[in-house]
Length: 365
Image 1 (tube, one colour):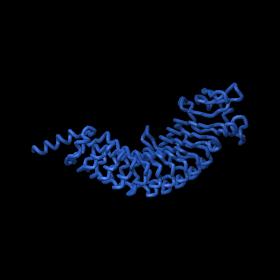
Image 2: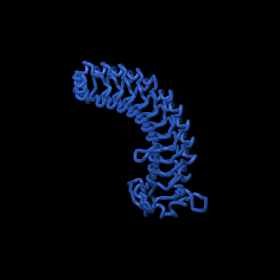
Image 3: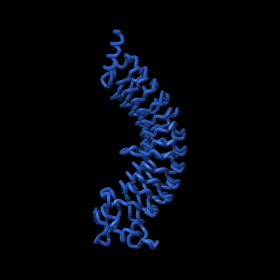
Image 4: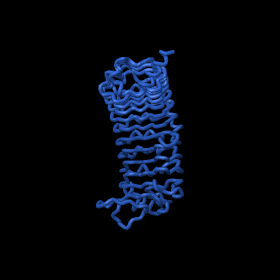
């Protein structure tokens, strides 16, 4: 079925057209201008009764098995954005999606019943963004995803709902995504590991693995991701340690380890992450110490140690941090005291009074 013969299926969709002189948006699939070219289709403003239960073919005539020359062929070459946000009744995409040769952005957010992608998704050679946030039933990614040679952003999991509890593995072909800059694996709660090939992602800048609860370790090959600027491992509760040679992440600025209860120590090499500006260790409740090498982080501005309940002492070298603007040690119940050298950074500390008060009470008793 084609869009020309099934305009009722396009009701409620926002259609973006261009005729080389202007870009217009409308909620109709018809146009009076024969020069208009459809460049984007969005279901964001659809009413629930208008949402597809079975996705129609984009390029074929209904029952004829032939390409629709008037609309299908044009869409194959013109469509840049396909936004199927909240298409919550779809369990799969129509294979004709893989024929959209110039598609740059495929948005599948909140497609809550979507289980997999077409096996030929790798045909979308110009795709730059593939957003599958809140696709809670997505079980796997096809191997052909490694053929997306222009992909810059890949997003999985969920920041609105409970995330994804069924995706256990990523294909090894993920390492072929040579242009990938952002890999979002938010709340992929069943994900067991990252593929060893992740080290091939030389352009990767941001890796967000918040609440990937089953990941025990990071592959050693990941140290080859030298462009990495932000690494978020918040609530990766099974993670035991960071790579010993993490200083190889020479571009790293933000390291977020909030509520990583399996982490007991940090590698000494963290002091050689020269660009590190934010180190978030909030509620790492089994962290017992901070390496003195952290005092060598000349660009560190934010250090959050709040609720690190087994942290016993702080290295005096933290007072040497020239760029420090925030140090939170509140609710560090096991902390024995504060080095005298910390007087110089007292004004940027949160929790100083709390700890000082507890120390005086202990001395009095």
